[in-house]
Length: 87
Image (tube, rainbow, N blue to C red):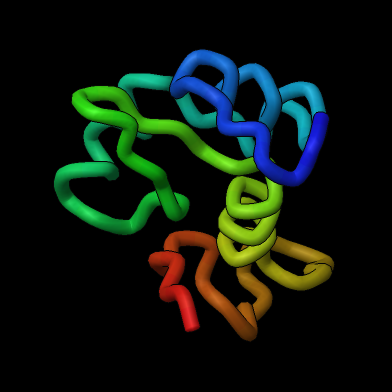
């Protein structure tokens, strides 16, 4: 994959599952919803279609990942549901 590769929503779904496993899984339908409501990864428009760059998907997944915890009741430094805010 080159730096300019853009993935469709279905390809983005498969990419995230392959690279990060099921805990990070997000469906193409969820990506579509997030494209309208916010909170999803950076996307690029191609007419009516959108594409996702792998580096943007990686950044977004990592922004949703909490730090190490010993239990579910441990306080998290960052919520796993924090929206991705590009800088």
